[in-house]
Length: 110
Image: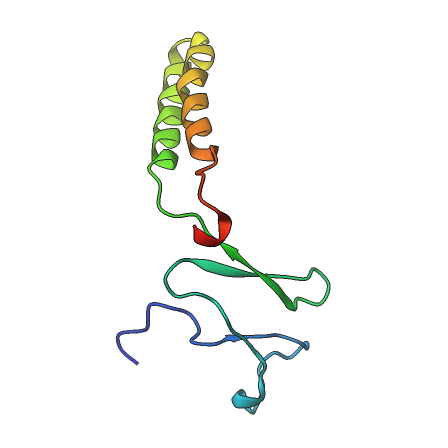
């Protein structure tokens, strides 16, 4: 259909064999229970790839942009001076700490 939906699958199919495309699409088992008000993804077992849990994705943040800018400035500055790695690692470290700092929101409410 046009325009295409903003999601990949309305119901996430579970792949349980080498040929995942079934003739009877209604007989394919599906994973359900994902929330629609936040970003979530399914985690699966390593060997059988069966869905095991839901993992909440973090919300939007400005910290990755600041870390990228600090890295860019440090690398460009390091062309002209080797001290750029020393002094440029300070703002880079601050942005990485801000990015990775726990947000204080319980995981189920993120």
